[in-house]
Amino acid sequence: MTQQPDFGVPTQSQTLVQGLIRSEGASYSNWGLHRSTTPAVFIEPISYADVQAIVRDSARFPSPVNPVGSMLSVASTFVNDGGTMVCLRKLDEVIGIERDATGRELVRVQAGCRLKKLNMWLQARGLEVPFQAEIGEASVGSVAAGDTKESSIDGPGYFSAHVAAVTYIDETGALRTLSDLADGAAFYEFKCSFGLLGIIVECLVETRPATLCRSDVSVEGFASPTELAAGLLAKRSQCDALLAIVFLHQLVSFFDRRYKAGPGIFTPPESQPECEAFRLAKRLGIQHGFDGVEVPQPKGLVYSRADFVNEYWRPSASERRLDFQYYEHDISQIERVVTEAYAFTKSFQDKTGYVPGGFATYFVQRLAQEKKPYGLYSSGPGVSFSFDPICSNPAEPLWQQFSREYNDLAIRGLGANASPIQTQWLKAGDVKIPRKLAKPRFTTPYYAQFLE
Ligand SMILES: Cc1cc2nc3c(=O)[nH]c(=O)nc-3n(C[C@H](O)[C@H](O)[C@H](O)COP(=O)(O)OP(=O)(O)OC[C@H]3O[C@@H](n4cnc5c(N)ncnc54)[C@H](O)[C@@H]3O)c2cc1C
Image 1 (cartoon, rainbow, N blue to C red):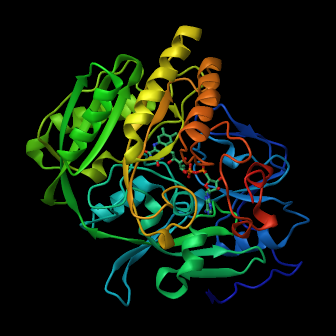
Image 2 (cartoon, helix red, strand yellow; image 1 turned 90 degrees about the vertical axis):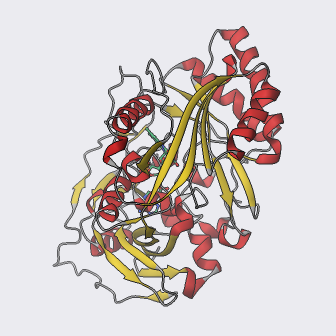
């Protein structure tokens, strides 16, 4: 670990923090508007020295100090009543490209930068990050130390796998850097810490020359949950990466089979207007939780994946808007998971009349355990899939009841790994975070329940 030059402890005569500070008891909500928090202080730092000063001054900035980016997370990860909420969104520069000692080309980017901005910046230079989720609003700092999923081509499918170094403010207010080349285990552990070891202000992220992708999109029905599970495996074996949205109670699935389509930076003109029609329909589908949106089924569509990293507007409480739960399973469990989830969903429908809008299914390649020692994807090399119920109204009581009861089946019955950022209604024991990954200055009551 290298300690970097300090920006200096501010004296009483200096301005402690230049960024915006609000301490009038305002509340802040997540994107879905179903969770909110009332911190004692809300701050938007505009320099690393601001973040250092905040961490050092526990009288003015009460513990816990918790970083947020775009506040999209569906779970209570950002809830920090009475504490200090540090929003990194104004530290969002893409600083530049650099090459490291091993020849890797890396982008240096500040933690508050949104993924869409980063993707566009790289695309303009003929580069890409191998992880390209649909969600363009998520901030680099959140996804570097938190959980993500995507059906990636030539990549594991979670963002933190591509983070090669983090610069952060530790619990003493020191600016520190950890990297894969210099710090090994300590670095990989930090990337599993959800901001509980420090506030990330800057990351180095692996890039590669930009590539194109080809998609075949279809919607197909199955006679039984067993056939549906077999269909998911068959579709995955036919392509380089598969994304499926399963309408489980109907035994119908939307498939996006993705194939490598060689080098290329921009969506080719001959793919238009189909590509833009597909992107906009998919974007609206995600915004509205796939409720009442027809998505086209193009075949052989060639495009830049960076173009499919989307912007989403902040919805109002009366709008349909995506909400979801996240569960990671090993691929060997797919038939059992689909079959038992089907039985559960049908029984819940019989009891209440409610079913979730669908189950989002991503496939992720796990790396060696030392590179992902804790949390999601930490069981060593192999393939994981997610089977994530989605809905279009996070405030719907029956959806919340479904999610709570489904946690019992998925986590306690089927042994799924859950995420404190992407799985809601977790109880103590559902997620286990080693105590060594959390410093008291940064640990909120929400996270304290998972420490062991
Ligand atoms: C419409 C929609 C679509 C989505 N699609 C996807 C998808 O395709 N794939 C996917 O993986 N996820 C998806 N998500 C989930 C989303 O990507 C994650 O919740 C992501 O973490 C949100 O980023 P954020 O900046 O809003 O994080 P926030 O909600 O602001 O913060 C979440 C947590 O991240 C940590 N954190 C934030 N900033 C820092 C920092 N600087 N240093 C250290 N820790 C920090 C803290 O623990 C914080 O509580 C989607 C969410 C929505 C609402």
